[in-house]
Image (tube, rainbow, N blue to C red; front, side):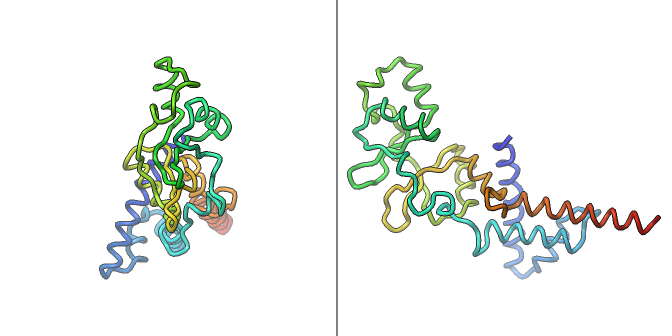
Length: 220
């Protein structure tokens, strides 16, 4: 269900971004958003919700990956490249996330996902106690900077079909943790803060219901 939301959100935001580009070329954004809204809901409130959604995901106040990882990152998902497959499996079991292998300087050298453990270890009957993580990891995986927005991360994961994405400190170039698609979608919905597209759309729906009820009473 969350992955379907991810695909729908990706498609919707792509349309909004194209509209924003059109506005930069001289067209009025409010007029464009108003034209995009369904005719039966074409009003100021709908336009404001769409503009607010676009601003929350792409504007200057858009949340970055730092808002998810926090100042300390996720060191519990990191293991040295000399670790064994058994060590990696213990981390996956404890964190319910993938494992990132790092070198002595803290730079990213590989990634091991739960699927890797199932297909490359269990499926092949490998001795996890005697096998180094380097034998099963995907070396030099793609990553994203921690100052990237949630939307930028979702775009990258959607385009490359990633479920997990390593995050690197934009300044130090060291690994700070990993994010997965489900928590990113949850965060854009509003997450624990309650500020996201889900809460904005819910507020719009509630306002529309109140307006409809008011009109119904007036007619009576």
